[in-house]
Image (tube, rainbow, N blue to C red; front, side, top):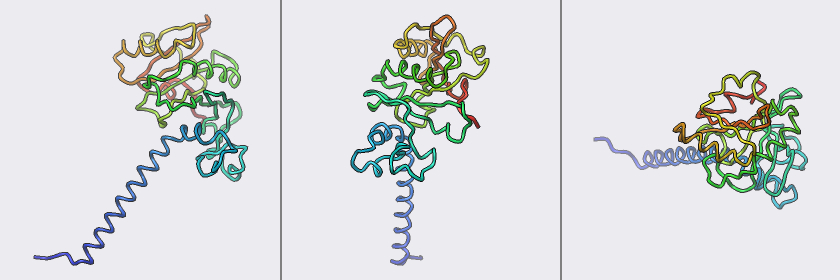
Length: 231
């Protein structure tokens, strides 16, 4: 019978520690990546805060610690209120002038479409910001992806353009119409329940009659119906 020598046992133990440490680092990095937007609204807005450069993962473009960083490593704030912030999405980096992809994020920690604390007011903030950036209201799409198809654990509404002629591909059974954007979450949840969707995304667009169209989708409304990337 062969026995492990003490040195072999020590080497094996150290190797296992290294593997466990590497896996832990990977998990930590993955968790941090999914909390980037939460970090932006909690640690990146006030450039005069103490330890700003060490706490903020993507500093504001006008801050000193943003110098030398690329577009994807900085935060460009379009608008901010006491409850929300509107920023440029990283997908705009490297795109031609005219391509728009923004994000509206609540300052409070709210997970996403499934969170009972999701605020009704976020849709009006997003729509007003979209009108300023895109102009033609019939081109605007506001999107929240399903919880299983998002990259971030903080609620965010995408400001994008609808794909041309995409409306004819909408499934009318998954659509509701509202006059007020404050009704979006309620009617979306009702439509999703009727369709037996356990998880769903939401798309909001303007109808020519003045109403807002609310579409629920099991897939990613962002990728199915909008010009979400320029590449």
